[in-house]
Length: 281
Image 1 (tube, rainbow, N blue to C red):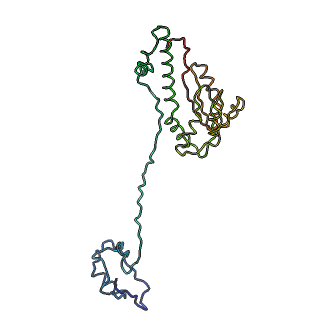
Image 2: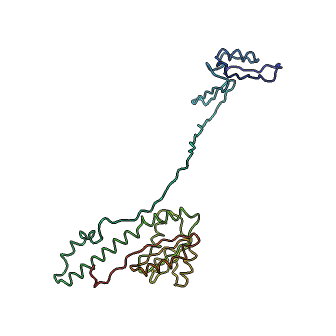
Image 3: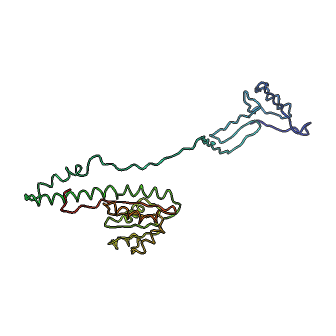
């Protein structure tokens, strides 16, 4: 930059610039003339643009020496950050979640033909015994398939994500269990694996729970009277019932109905009850 000094005792404190829309842009020679008229002494190294208008001044930033130069000013050791331009959309972006039911392309019996075909050769040649053993094998594979569909890590992870997205604090959860793998224990393991917020308190209402497994996950065992009261006060109720008849489904809905009031969440995991061993599948 050149030497720029302000004239002492000027006739005017400042120069008023008359902006005319029809005026032509100033050239570099005009800048020298205007500065000299205003009383500035411009050195030979003074930098001016070749052409500009009166609406804005050009700024030159030398990145390698960190100097910012403009008309009549120079900033040393200047660290400049680019302005972040955020695009503002007129319409908000909406996301829609849709629950898609799980559909099996083939019947369960057709899916298990290949799985159980190799076991038929090892069965007894007696017709009645063969039929009984084949049915037991079919029921065993069928239960494993249903359990893998209804209660697995992916299912619980999706369920917990939906619940936590709609809650601002840790939840208290209660499970109503009847002859089914305990879901609340698996849910606690999923939350610990994915570093999700732990449940504030857990309770289980079941016939024969595994006490040792419940103690490892800080889950309390409740009686029937305590369980109904706990279900009404819980933020999330999980049901893992064996059901097959319409009456059992109605009773299950009546049991869970208190927990669905006042904005509480409810999740039902159902498994088809196995048929008697003497009945043909």
